[in-house]
Length: 198
Image (cartoon, rainbow, N blue to C red; front, side, top):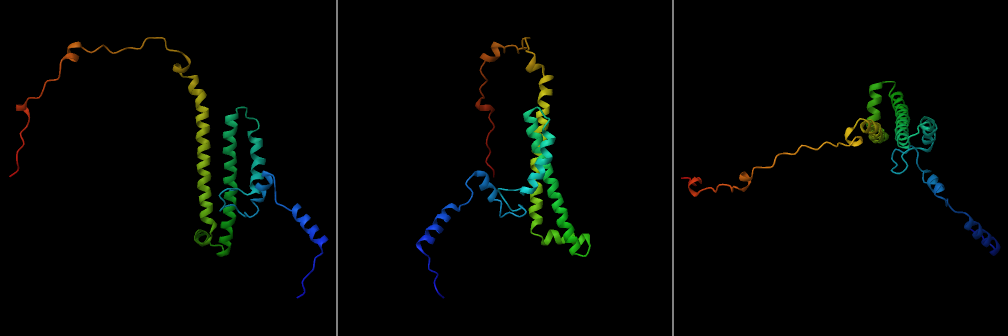
């Protein structure tokens, strides 16, 4: 096999072109390229949601929270709607996967469920992701409840808004004799005797 000879001019041109060829430089480009190997994102630790799902979710979430004036409530409702829509899309993915297993088993729903749970490697990952989303949704719901309860509690709280000017009742001072009298010493005769077991 004959070797391909390259002239110095061609070699210099190749090296110049190689210097121009590089990967992404900006953080947004690096973030986008890092998702290129992900398919369903169920095994991913960093990027847990596919880009197509994220675009659909934000298209639904942004109009829902646009009219909320309170920034804290807007952020909490954004998280709540975001994780809720993510859970809904994951549920659709789960149902499509389950229908495929049921069709593979000849339409038998029971065998399809068993086959999906036993042989599909994505079953456990989907269940794990559902649990992860349930935790996030629960945290957002509790945060929203606490945020809504704070103004109501401050409105009806007489301690924080209306200062209490009445003197607090104090307990009477202890009797001087009771404090000065020492505790009676236990005499040696009152102590129980130790008996040796036979």
